[in-house]
Image (cartoon, rainbow, N blue to C red; front, side, top):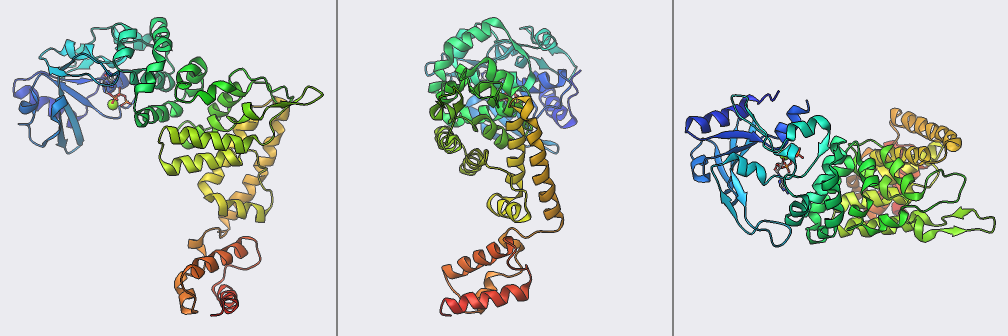
Length: 443
Ligand code: ATP
Ligand code: MG
């Protein structure tokens, strides 16, 4: 059953009242039939864009492609005129699009059968490509000839992987074979679009299974991943090769946290270039966290992922092999360096890294438990680990005669002293120490 929410019904009603066919299409139909809550509702209509523009609340957001956004009380709804795509020459976008009055033509241009269904106000389902049966069978399959569809628009290759990771479906063998054959076309796609899909892939509950099945597809933009595949670690700590270990770590961190998932996938990406085997035949990876961080940095830059995300992911990779401190001072310092959210991520990454090793070493979880317990206590006690918690402000230091960069330097020195337990976070204590420091600087 597809339950169309009132604000979307209202748009369909307006279009129908004006004599135009109007349908909910794509992801919202797929998700509803799966019993999931759709993220957004897309409307497809026989009305031409200028006819849709006659609706109240209409905004011309993508007229060239036939898209009009209708503002409603329940939120914006995109209504797009039924479209046929012309020839594709650049593997990215059709050279031309033309409008059609046929819903079926519009569904034919869509990527996968499960995304090519439509429902109208009367509850009628249009499903010319067997999307419903594929949904029931848990099968992802291109509409039409998969080679041609990936050739037209190579982003569909990554969308295919993303839907597999989100839905846990099997992929039809013809679609899988075409995906492998055409994967090189991903080079033609803007890296920002790759990153947007890849992030969603990472957040899928079946991300590890998907990457395990198609490493060579991600290897088109991240060839570094392929060096991990099949690399036997020759070390009793490990029961998996580097790639399997990384996928197990990825699967062991929460799906919704893309930053953590990215760090888990890349935490050992430097291992292949650090691999040595000693005289006893045991494998070692000296210096791999630094090398992994260096590679992760370059891989994330290549996809132009946002700077803050990149810096935080790289820092987690760099820190992943350090022992979690088990003293108040050590944990306060880690809090100072990482902040609470990323310190919690580091704990989760270390847990996952350990659980992706041979089970006889899983007792190291206890060390992480201990660090986490101290962290929780410190936070409950209101431990000070950031400038904004410090009981003294920059303005206090200005009053003492400090100015310019000396203000920040002094605040940081005070914070470090508090974090290290040398000073109490009390205003009078801090002011007294600030006076000493100021005197030392000739104020
Ligand atoms: P999500 O839940 O992530 O929004 P979705 O299926 O709605 O999934 P969108 O990117 O919102 O994905 O696209 C809406 C619909 O447009 C898809 O369901 C599909 O029918 C069609 N579509 C999107 N991108 C493509 C593409 N590259 N090629 C063909 N059809 C596409
Ligand atoms: Mg959508």
